[in-house]
Image (cartoon, rainbow, N blue to C red):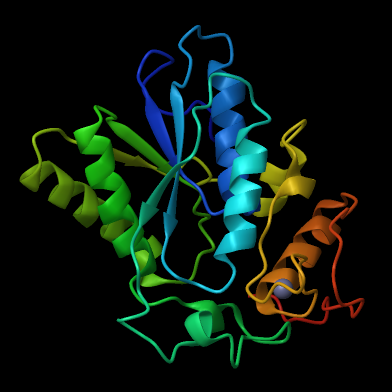
Length: 241
Ligand SMILES: [Zn+2]
């Protein structure tokens, strides 16, 4: 099983690209655990990129809450803007219409240019602020092309070729399953994470693709799901990818 050691060491500042969900929060928690004895305040920098998507208010709130649970080693969240509404004004992520339901396949939740845009913006921020490593919570089961080895190698190459400082992109969740990472989470506050693409009154809707994934993840890990869902419908019938 792959080591959980992340990055080059406790003395180098490292950024974590946050979405507020289980995966990026586990990455942040692993780093805080690994480097927790370091004396450098703010050595771990959470970054959230706001794109104009319908669920971002709830997501960012979760990012700020979970980031605040790991002590002074985690810096206040940096929020960057990367609006995509002009790119795809009719997309469900912007309009809120036709949001993939709990029975939709994983491929239904693809967001145009997602990782390319996020990594470009956050990567340049890292270059400008002397941060040489940036971690992202991508699992090996991610079905999209912008989560492939080739993609990340290309983005790293771009950041190296263009900028004054290289930025390594780290994928510390690679090599284990989501279930394994959740079981290794320990005191990482999984219940405070947010992973819904159709929130209702500030809550997980309980009926969208990502709520289904979340409920299934807790179930498969054998962990209690303390999430408050707006809808009581059980989406566990969603087919596995
Ligand atoms: Zn939902």
